[in-house]
Image (cartoon, rainbow, N blue to C red; front, top):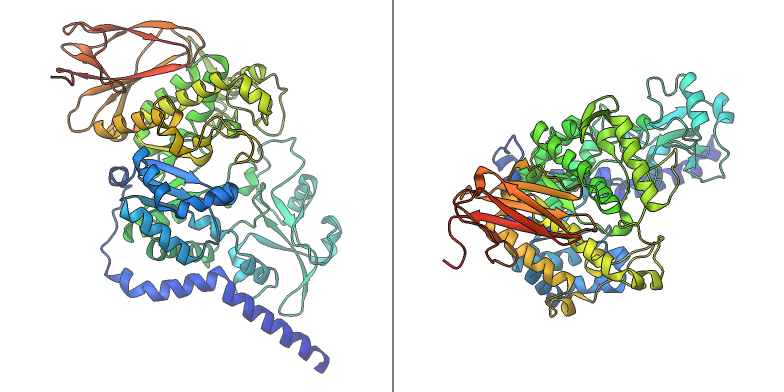
Length: 599
């Protein structure tokens, strides 16, 4: 027995050191240090505080500092923050992990001096708990409860993939998952959403000796794209919630962040149920964040009907992006019109959403709304069609435009405009530069001229593309140079954001999707806050000039004012209609009021 003492002493020292670095211990220390402060804080609002959040920040700039490389150094320079402020940005989302608190303090000061807010990602860092996971697989204290760890009996190790010593993440094939399910290890776990998928969201560890000197092999749920172990949100010890609450307190109270980004994993495997924060866990986190004076935004892959129940203050818009892509690829905006009609039917207002511009190289032809409602009937043009058939039809049209073949596993990733291969070669970028810029600007216009948060990235400002988009050619010059050119992407975006802020369009209410005879045209009617005046966002996604007669009682005894040029459009004052004309890949936004700006 004495021969094991040095080994056990070493193991004890190792686990003790790991525990000091674990997120769970850090979360408990943060909770203790702020317990008295939180006890004195007033109760949080029980419902999402969307309006209050939008009043503070409705234009977000995001940057992944790891992807930016050296250009990311400018984020610590006052001159760059002045440029963002001039552009119209009022919140900055820095997607990074491991930045020292001193650096965050400087960034927080730069933002605060300009009245800008910071967006944080607490749960992302919580999922990176290397120390926590190593303690968990060593069966140390309650750490196994933090993850979806299932111990496999030694007699069944032959079913698991071979793993080298020290390998803690060997992918488990779907066939093995089905066998383990038959043996009772995964009883009740649903199958994959795509039946033909060979891979799974499960991984296996190599044999590893625990703190009790027992040799074990585990399987666990992981994020399929990164291999990061997934936090278990439904464990009775609530270890996941304790880590998340600690991370939230750290972000809000120490890093000066005001809006916290809560992300759930894209629904690739149904057996990952429980991987994402449960409804109760999300509600608790949203309440805690509001109690601490912050706001929350959730990225959720769910139907519109389910998403409207989100307890957070904001929700990322995953519904319109594939429809915008489809409209640009095919020149047909009917699917996009349908999404907005569902918004009205389900009473989900676009002002609740974060509309992301996103680089064109990151667009996906995914139709989540229809795939999650396969047997629901939708009216598409003049026919009724089920969700599964509509998704298949739209995907085939996308693929035809992209000249790609369907895949039974995942939705295709493609350049947003379907003009060039991905990544774009320098000569391709130059050959299609004009149309790429017009389509990119049109997408920005569509999202900027509607309620909610408008979010764009450093990649958007550069017009970047490809696997390493911050290197190589881009569509645009640096921001400082763009703002000196009135025709540049950034300068035109600046005009949109200025008009949006002046009218309070970010708080407006969507009231109607006006009918049109044009396939590529979408007409969104909004009612503005306070004044109760109406505005209209009109976008032509086709490659053809269009003319449409707009009619409605909201036009009677009103002038039509172009929000960008602030000039009066051709319309008789007393008429209840006016003629809209739009060039290919262009848009206009109008304010209907009794007096033009000049009066």
